[in-house]
Length: 307
Image (cartoon, rainbow, N blue to C red; front, side, top):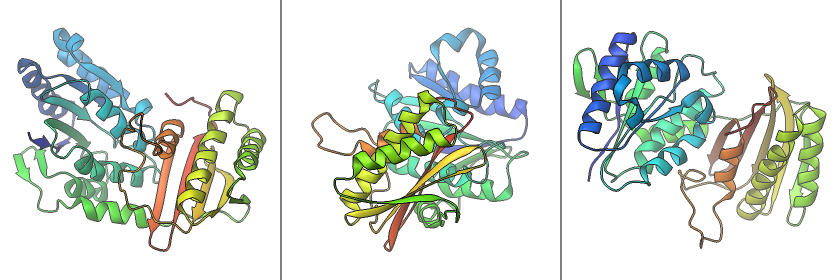
C-alpha cells in the first residue's frame, strides 16, 4: 500500500481545474471512492466541472468542516475508513482568508497528515493558490508535502520535513492578555470549572446553543490538564477578534503529535477529550514543550454552531 500527499500549486481557475479534475476522473475510473473538501467557491467550481460525474463524489465545504484545522484529519479518516482499497481525497485547508491566528494550525495539520495516514492506500491532493497565498505559506507547503505539482509538472520537494513544522507550530508562544479572567483548577474541581466557563460564555455573549459546547470543551481541557499535566492547571478566558477564548496551562508535555486527531475505540478508557474539543471549537491551538503545555480554544461570537 502507498500513501501520496502532493501539493498542487495553481494560479487561476483553469490551472485549478487542470490539476484536480483528472485526479478525480482517474480515481473514479479505477472505482476508487473520491471526496473533495475545499472552500465553497472552489467546491462550486469543481461541482460544475465534473458535471455528470458529480453524483459519484462526496463534496465537503472546507470553510465549514475545516474551520478548525484540528477537525480535518478525523473527518478525512472517517471517510477513508468506510472503504477497503484505494481512496482519493482533494483537501484544501489553506486559503487566502485564513487569519494569522488560524494559519499555524493549518500548517500543523498539513504536517500531521503525513503521520496520520502513513501506510494507507490513500492519495490526498492539496491545492495551494500561488497568487493569493504568501511566500511563507508556500514554503511551508513544500515542507509538508513530499511532491509538488506546478506548471512545470511533478517534482519532489527538496524541503520536505514535516517534523520541523510540527516542532515549530508547537513551539509558538500562546499568550494571554492582562485582563483575562482566570481560575486555578485541581482534582475534583470540574463542576466549578464548568460553572466558571458557562458564566464567562454568557457574560461575553455566546448564544445559548453554544454556551454548553464552550463549557464542555473547557471542562475537557481542564480534566486532561489535571490528569496529565501535574495535578493542577490554570484556566483563563477573554474575548478577542469577535471570539471568546479559553487557554489552559499546565506543566505537562504532550508527546503524541496526533493527540485529538485519531479515532478512539469503544473499549479504550480515555483519549476522547481532545477529540471532542476539536469537534466543538472553532479553532484549537497548542503550545507544548518540555517546560509545559498551553491549549487555546476559540469559539466565534458570531455564534455559528460547529458541524
